Length: 219
Ligand code: CTP
Ligand code: CA
Image (tube, rainbow, N blue to C red):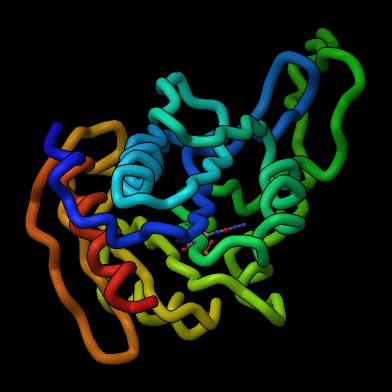
């Protein structure tokens, strides 16, 4: 009901969002993942749709309902998320990267379940780096307006600004984790070329709506 009375700040815009963790397989029954709940990305998808946008949500493995009228693409690994995002990024006006993409994956995927060999020897895994999805989208010639997220455990503003520069994106949204993982509320720090602005602690949908307003004014 509230949505009905909101101005449609993103009418006619296409918004692409990544959300949730990724899962990097070690063997058919095991893998490496992280504690991202996906709630922030799903809240932004809902808020953007309410603001009139056509929304595509690329989600890692999470158990969350799809927001109404949002096109959802489910993926598992960082590479799959990259391959789902890149071909369609330029067709969108805004890209919001909330996903906690695994930075590394096991260099090889064991075809069968890795078994104890009876010698008490433990396996060790060589890792290889995953593609940086946000940086790749930001390098596209006709890139959308790119928004990065930075979940940090300390020095939030410094790390967020470093990511703004390193990934060459106009806006980075910082938050302190892992305190926020899975929680329904949060505090955000918006970092751009002009400075910093805090969005005070609120539930994730309230923060998402405020962030959508901020993005809309920047387009
Ligand atoms: N990101 C991405 N693809 C990756 C890694 C990160 O798209 N392979 C995006 C995230 O979705 C987020 C932003 O980049 O929007 C920052 O992610 P973060 O993990 O904080 O940055 P990293 O560059 O991976 O640095 P570090 O983990 O060392 O802090
Ligand atoms: Ca990372």
